[in-house]
Length: 156
Image (tube, rainbow, N blue to C red; front, side):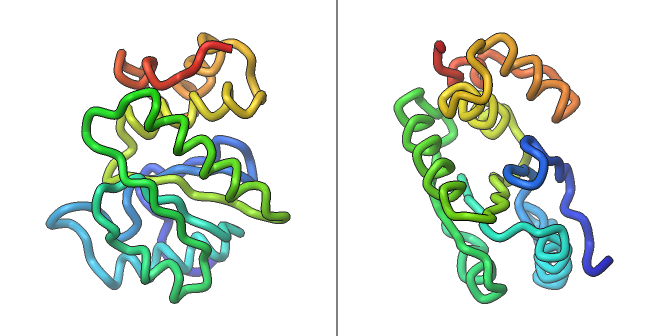
């Protein structure tokens, strides 16, 4: 297997929707070599597209240079449900391309990312119960979702 697995990488929908922390690390930990190694690993795993939820457009050019489709939906620290709906639409658009495996990330796998993922499962009809979506994503990421994450999950 080529490359280096990104931190906190996990599949939310096996082979279609994944999450991890920022590719290459975040803040002062970010390294170009690490980013290249993690992109190589993602490509080897079948990831074909990346959606960055970071406010800045870091890494977008690197994703495109590697042949990944790149999407950027900048989210502020305090995300509102209306912001989440915009991101759900982008995830749906990306996954509508045949054979897409999409990675969604922010600097870290925080409550915003977790809430977006749980919310998408409801918005796209994979699950019809927000409580079930919360439980599923909590199991996938291995920690509880806080109130901010839960506020991003639409009612079915």
